[in-house]
Length: 115
Image 1 (spheres, one colour):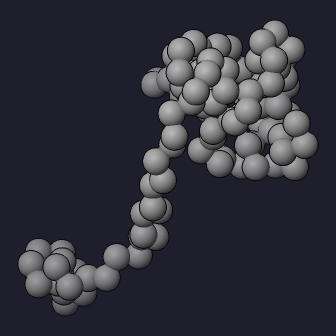
Image 2 (cartoon, rainbow, N blue to C red):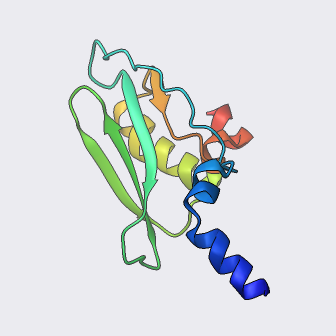
């Protein structure tokens, strides 16, 4: 009887239509104003390659010039993100005015915010 009920519910159109979603609602996107100069606004994220490799990858993109900095990393920690940003971006090219991220845990850690 239990198997019959489970199959019935899975195949029931009304059940599927009226079922409440348990997913969080999508966030509201805000437009990003275009940068006025090179190296003003940078975007930074970890990139996962499929199939996954033993090392991750990190990248920074200048939104105006599309200049990209890429580096393989061992992990996705806030220490790795901060070290990459300082060594590969700030020390070589200077600090940007704005840094955009996906607000992952490695970017919202206090260490990264202190930079």
